[in-house]
Image 1: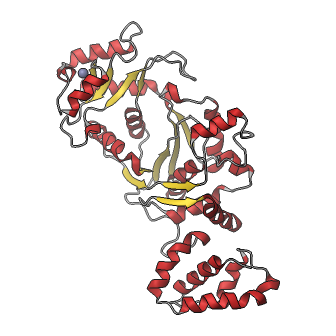
Image 2 (image 1 turned 120 degrees about the vertical axis):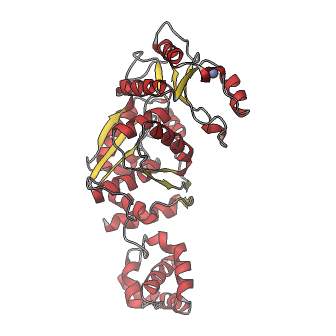
Image 3 (image 1 turned 90 degrees about the vertical axis):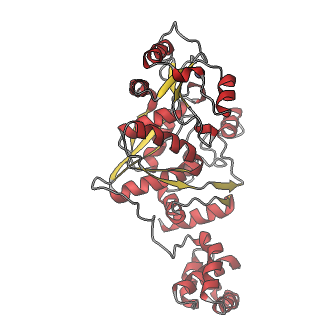
Amino acid sequence: MIEQKYIWAYGLKNAVEHEGKAVVGSVIPGLFNCGLKKDKIKDEMPGIQKVLKEINSMKIDEQKDKFKDYEKLIGHRFEREGLAELPDVGKKGVITRFSPSPSSPLHLGHILTIGPGFLYVKKYGGKFYVRIEDTDPNTIYKPAYKMIEKEVKWLCDNNVEIVIQSERMDLYYKYAENLLNKESAYVCECSQEDFKKLVDAKKACPCRNLTKKENLERWEKMLDKNGYNQGGAVLRFKSDIEDKNPAMRDFPLARINLNKHPLQGNKYRVWPLMNLAVTVDDIEMGMTHIIRGKDQRDNAKKQKMMYDVFGKKYPWTGYIGILHFKGLVLSKRKMREGVESGKYTGWDDPKLPTVVSLKKRGYKPEAFWKFVEQRGISEVDKIISKKDFFEVIDNFQKEV
Ligand SMILES: [Zn+2]
């Protein structure tokens, strides 16, 4: 027997597309995708007609509303085809990026993050950067560099430019110095606890009032191998010490980390934190549009503050809500533990939602892109079960 939900899905789709009237002949072809066998049509017909009768007795608004519950099953979009148009697209198209950390190979969550930016560059032309953010030596899983490179090339059909942040350190230092010269940053020697106590009370620490010269000397001391110890000083951005949001107040830009970096070894001791490195790269690469998780809103504000200091226009930014997958392991730590302990046969174990596993199972990137198009740039969080998600993807997979 064909599952009722598919009759509802295709029945409602047909109805909302045809002024509230579903016709059995138009519904049947869709049902072939969902397990309806030709030689069983006769047996299934009463069940199908019963649902259609019910659908046709509904008002069109009710049908549209109800269809929302079923839409995801069959991946239909009755409001638009593809992603919505982006604002401010120039003649050269869109420059955007995806910024993974090399702490594990990529998984399903990454595919869905890559999707919008990649599809927009495909649509408008421009450039899609994959920027490996590896300026925290503590969180790197070395094999991930090569894996990510291979995975994004496969996903994006080679239309990507891959950049590794730890190879651009001079640039971050240059911008840090610029900020010091503009007196928009300072080197803070306070302990984390002391600093926190002060900013929580909206009070500046003593380092904030140093002269430019003193700050540049302290910066040299950060870079000097005989200078500060790890934790001895941080570079801070001079924001608004009375900002409503405590996280915005004089946030850190760079710190000393003496741990060995998997690519750079002990060549560098001062490492830019995410907000500095991201801002520098976004400026240097000429980002025009950024699509990011809505949990990045505070970081976007911090980065915009630096853009303002450099007199640059901040890129258009779109936010996407979080998609929670019920029944899927997406924790990098858990995946890695499982791979290392032998619980999984490797990163391509069919139980894992990694890109290598999905590829091995025969999935095509286009099936996921269709899902991305259907979801659009929406800030709404969603919960989806593993089963429902793969039903949708499997249907898309048949289409592509
Ligand atoms: Zn201080």
